[in-house]
Picture 1 (cartoon, rainbow, N blue to C red):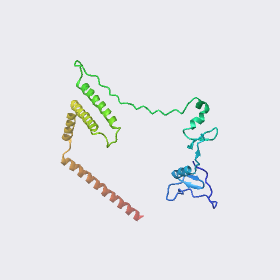
Picture 2 (cartoon, rainbow, N blue to C red; picture 1 turned 90 degrees about the vertical axis):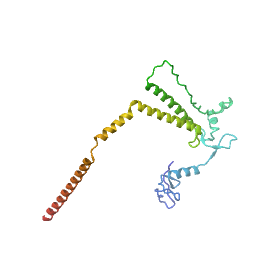
Picture 3 (cartoon, rainbow, N blue to C red; picture 1 turned 120 degrees about the horizontal axis):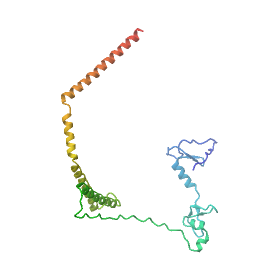
Picture 4 (cartoon, rainbow, N blue to C red; picture 1 turned 180 degrees about the vertical axis):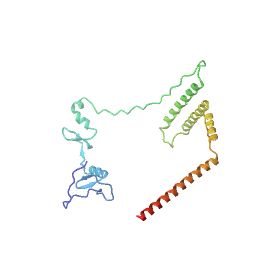
Length: 234
């Protein structure tokens, strides 16, 4: 984008510190036609000074935005492919291929395998299967709701998502109860409460720290006075 700096009318180089556009205090990075611009204003100036060529295809009045390297002629996006491939393709009726939109991936629901009455499962396996079933349904609902704006989600779909999230939370609580997590947490809190120090012990520790700090302060002040006296006798 940048060019060499041009001299001003009086022969001196222009100040390359800030953009020459009035009111813009951004640092200048590019010199175009003797003026210093910032990146944004430099790009705007380049676009404004560019000469727009007309498409060289007969009968086309569109802007020629694509330059052909072999001839130097300009063509619009519609005719640049035709001009590059030559008349042979035109005679056979070949045209620029149309862009096919990418197919949308549909969310396919796969029903879980039903459990038979003779299946033997532990409680952990059964609750894990149920948890996966709820989580898969929640994922489908969330992907479906992602198509809407956050403020325009249908009330029924939002309620489905909230209900499934609550079911997953309930399963997690049940799993913690099965693992005895709440009991272990209560036992740990009981041990901490039993081993905590008394108020008298905490007050004594605080008093000892304050006494030690005061003692160090007094010793420091005595040391400073002693050094001042020794400096005065010298």
